[in-house]
Image (cartoon, rainbow, N blue to C red; front, side, top):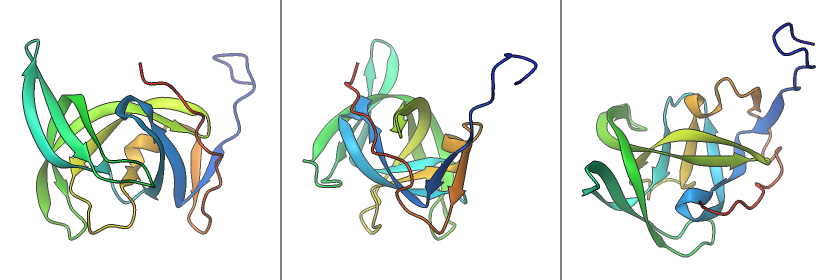
Length: 156
């Protein structure tokens, strides 16, 4: 039991280097994600990325090409940041960052995701370390698909 809550702490969730996730607010019920603890920020494959204004706030409109057998789709999300993020070759790129709901093994929480063209990569999304930090998650780099499939969650 913890002194603060008086409850028994939840055992850590052990996940593999790739897992099935959902991003329901973007209409993506099932994606295979690479868990990349070497990357700080998560990155989602997107093309045709454009900023626009809605009710005085900056938003982003972007296209998600075919991913994990899903149909291609256009998405919109509020822009939360613009960051210089190092790409796979270590070169900084200016990227737009959105916040969205992540579902992993039935657990749900909000994460920051940068939008970038990952067409040369095998998986459409990487989950960086800030997405899993302080969530009681351990990564077993020698395993895949340790977590269950994400529970279908309707977009709000």
